[in-house]
Image (cartoon, rainbow, N blue to C red; front, side):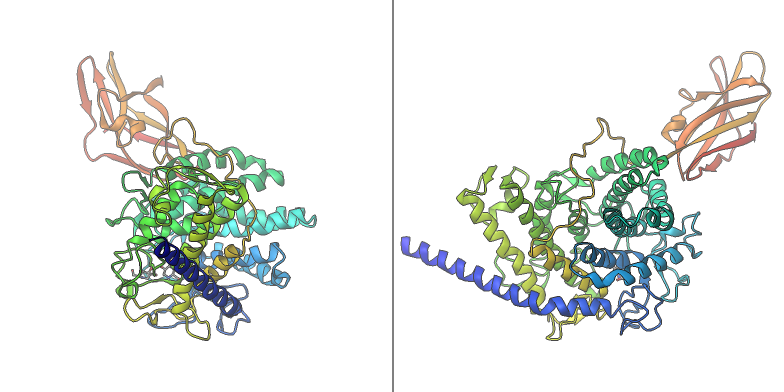
Length: 574
Ligand code: NOJ
Ligand code: NOJ
């Protein structure tokens, strides 16, 4: 018995060592391959990016099945965030010219009129462009509202470095801030509107999108304060608070995971949520669950639910122990190319775990709660809720098992990476062979950021520490505008004009609770109401005299409220 126990412990230790040796070897060979693969996909001199303008990131050089020879704002921004992190931490000083070219390219794309609109009418939500910086005009899932947020985060990281290095205030204020302000205003004005998710399929609100929008606004506020652009601060803060409130609503407490989208009709288990944890990681925020930090109980519970959803559906995962690393994809219901594991999803799982390990080491303890218990029990079935200091045996057992688990995900990718280190988008769920777009730039960036996390690298805080929720959270209340309703209506003595309509602010079509207009400018009756911005609102005027109510004739009146500011409606009673 005792012998068997020791033997199994030794077996475990051997397995852990094997896993970490294999991960070490993969990191050593894949790091240069991924960096080279990534740089090859950036114009104009990248060897696989012919035809791309300077600083333009191609998603992949693949021109058919699928054709990915376009530039996506999301992919490009995530890729450049990884490069900017390397540059600003001194890991690669050679990247500055490329970073400046990226920012110029994105500033150009902001101004390109496209099917989502112009720069001032929604065009910033356009997901992808041609690599010569012209608009892509075919049908597509648009808008996608994570792009401007991710782009801001990348550029703000660079701006903060410039400021900290004492040579950038005027450059940041005059060159970067105007670009940032366009994106951040867009985020402020539209974060609560529906749009397509990061997988370009579901048109609703999406956890990843809300989370990266929230982060961008917080960083934008901090930068604005630093460079004296304080006029935006109160509006950005109001919407950052609203977004943080809304972010909480994706959490599904009974099932222990974040539901990726408010629409879509799926389980909602989705790599979206793991990508959120790693791309909103703030090493100073501890294991805060309000911002779903990688080591928060909610994000760990979610990670287990997400990973487990792929154990039985991919043949490549068969025979793997229920607490060991497996191949994971975008979401279990995925049918794109028949639904397969994605390298970037597998890397993201490893990265979330490495991020968590960084924070536990840094804070010298690890906390197990009722919410995260199932996650931790995978590594020690006897563990109970509680706080374990780094001097405890439980801390050591858990963190070393979690390190092995994390390394296991890198080893999953290693197993499906060809010897030249090339990373495509997916690998086949049955055969394990690389599949779909070859040399996916995002796959390379995801590998590099997971390797950096494994080495314990952290990057600048974005201000997640100490954020608290407002005392009341009002759904996805977003920006509002002032709308003045004027209606010309002749009335008899004792008769008054009211308004009601399709939104709560107009009393949801209730004649009893309809809002009274002022007759100060009779025969024009008037009222100014705060309404949600960028929203189609229907309304009617009604006359009330004693108990009798007379509605205007059909159809309903309708107004699309502007994105910001105020507007006046002049109507005549019908
Ligand atoms: C292409 C999109 O990029 C991908 O995310 C999606 O799954 C497929 N179209 C199918 O809708
Ligand atoms: C399809 C993915 O679903 C989407 O997230 C990505 O932006 C594009 N491919 C380009 O890589």
